[in-house]
Each structure stands twice: as structure tokens, then as C-alpha cells.
Length: 195
Image (cartoon, rainbow, N blue to C red; front, side, top):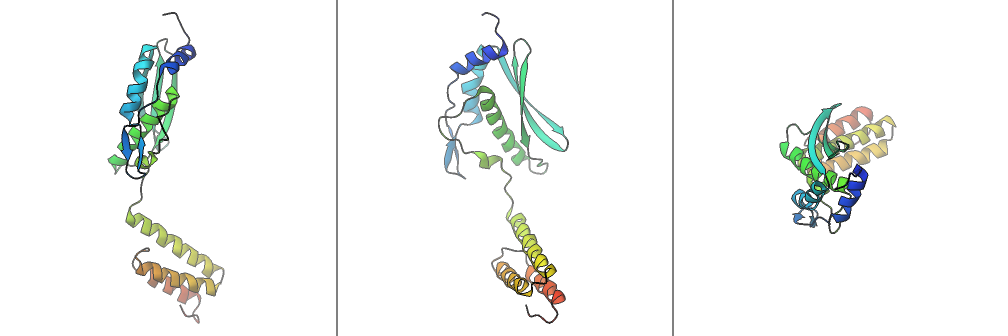
């Protein structure tokens, strides 16, 4: 084989690389996607044939994890691409899922390929909030809106928000005790008002 530059070799490899087969199913989106194994099978043998190696490493920098893909050519030149990872120290499944997802997309990006159809597997790497976290977020948002209405001395809006918070608590969409907090906030702000 004649000496080629990294770019020339990558062009030759990309002309041979075929689409990654969609061999996995995402039940959250009811869609199919190309697994890392499928992408690896489509890409790595052709890249190796043309003098490339690919390795993945992780770094922790500035409080963030990153997955790095190193595409190295036989002459030592390289491309490095990164993928941000969640800092889910207490949930290794989330980190593991994000690593698989990141490896797949970094490898597809370095090889400039895609799978045989639209690939919508982003859900597995997304950190899904728990029911308690969702309830907490809704609770804080509702109380923040009530605080804003009270700060604006808008008794009508505050009264509507208290009623809405009571309804949301009965539906268990906000934390238990939120309605009592809302009534107390309203009563303290509008002593002559009725919530």
C-alpha cells in the first residue's frame, strides 16, 4: 500500500463502510436503532484495513465526565471527539447507558455513517426524573408562582393558585402538605382575604 495521508485513508475507508444495521429496539419510543455492536461491526474492520484504530477513554474535567473517541492513523496522527456524560455517581446504570450511547454515536460520527433508517434511541441515555423528583419540581414551581403573585399583591391570582395547588395535591401532583403551605402563605400576605 502506498503512503496516504490520514484524510486520504479516511476517504478510502468511508467509501467502503456500509450502513449500520438496526438490530435493537427502544421500547420507550417504539423504534429500532443500530446497537453499538452493529456499528462496531460495520465500521471497525474497514477502518482497521485502512490503518486506523479506535479507542474510547473517559476523563473527568471541570466537574464533568466526558467520553473520548480516539481515531488514530498508522502514522500517529489522530482525531479526538468527545461526548458529555451525566455525573450519575449514584446510578451506574445511567452512566453505563450513556457510555454505550456515546460510543455508538461517536463511532458513527467519526466514520460519517448512519444506520439504515432514522435512529431515535436517545431515551436510554437521558436521565429520567423519578416520580418524587417530578412531584418536587411541580411543587416548587407552584409555590414560586404563588410567591410571585403575592409579591405583586395580586390577590385574585394568588387565590386561583391556592385553589390549583389544592387540586394538584388531591391528584398527588404536588407534595403532601403543599396546600397547607400555600394557604398559610396566602393568609399571611392577605390577612383579610379568603383562600
